[in-house]
Image 1 (tube, rainbow, N blue to C red):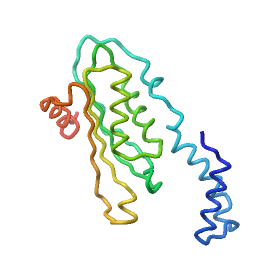
Image 2 (image 1 turned 180 degrees about the vertical axis):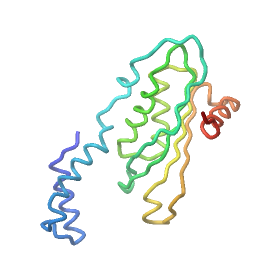
Image 3 (image 1 turned 90 degrees about the vertical axis):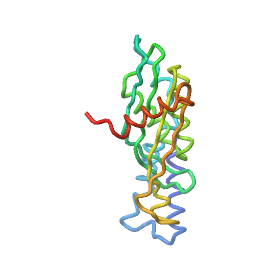
Length: 188
């Protein structure tokens, strides 16, 4: 749980450290606004995928399920700057499926934490693998990192792509190729 009082104190100290007047009109309520914002954007710290993925439905087939273009926003744990993009999640059911919104909610659980993209990709794949026990899982994240856009190398528009494979996806190039095709080319 976010300790709002500590966040307010830290933000006040930060503003003072950069030479700002914390009593000026535009900044008076900033510590409170940021404490409320942190409660929202770091809400995944208190969320558990077990609950999200617990409602399942029985199926007879084992055709790949793909949820693509799931928009996410996260905070880089190295600079506390945003990174954002799209998540693409696939799994091959093993007798059970979840509602499609549950995949997006699983992405949100891990996005709403201080993160690195590589770990977030693996956490999503591992959670689905552990909770649904599917035949396989594949997750791909594509994101732009503000720590590369606003500071440092300053390369806006560059994207980082990470992939995690579990189960049947690990060594099955045909299954992986099908996933990539559905993510990139498939249009209704």
